Image (cartoon, rainbow, N blue to C red; front, side, top):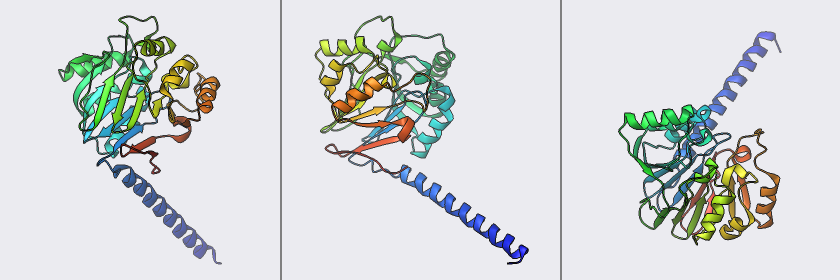
Length: 290
């Protein structure tokens, strides 16, 4: 084949491959924005690296729990916009560590926000300072997270805060606001970074912790997900939010072994990336779109 014809043929192939990739990317984006939100609860465990961020959509209402690290804020904003989020009816920051509030100032500035909740815990980090400034710029009041506070997520839905259960803790992780969400017969428990002390308080206070889905505490660290706590929750699905090859060694092998022992299906953001669970109130399934 003459050289000029070969070069022309090669160029055409490259263009066709590029077009195919663009169509595929556009298709995947379309899938993501066309989740069936009617008569379903959709829970997004968003891949924000070594951090936490969860979006819950039900009854045309949106609840955001945490916002990941500051490094992931633009990625998070793109994800929310791609899923047609214009208003966050509720935002909850589980506790003031950077890997949970790093993107919060940007979220507050970018989206319409209804009510904002946080535990009575402070930090000297720049992320915390930026979050407070962003809240003040919009004259938002911080609702202090307390046990037995309910958020209104509409019909057939319950959203209740179960912690923190003490006024002061030595470990900031134990201030974590643990939240239980139920939609019809589907139940979810979001444990923040609550460690064994806070877990035991939940048990001692007699809360119904049983849930089909557990957002595993503290990125799967061995200091969380105690055996007593796991026995109470007994999740069918366990979701771990952590960064690939993180320096903390999360998730810990001991925690993974506990979850495997009770036959929990384990999803991890470092492996599965964005994890989307959808339920009609009876069956919880992992959404297969990318």
